[in-house]
Image: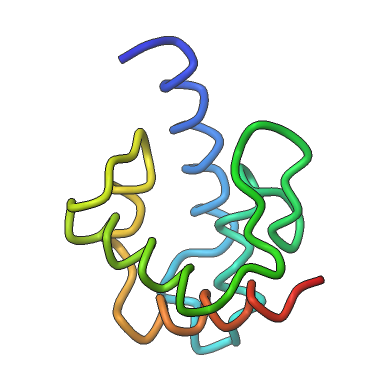
Length: 100
């Protein structure tokens, strides 16, 4: 793993400590906090990481499902997505699709 991959994994892990998938009962906002470390607040990434805000829910759900199943290539997301239930993936996709 490269130094950049280690850094990205660490940043995403910090986000998971802030709000783990088990906190989904507190609403999708709490669940989405785990994404902020890499994808920015409300999915508005300022850098090279993809912006999630405003993307269609169907597209986001397909991406997360693909990461979870291991059918979509990724550096970190394939490992992170395995921790989400199908209901949490639906909640995240809906949440980010509504961000503008």
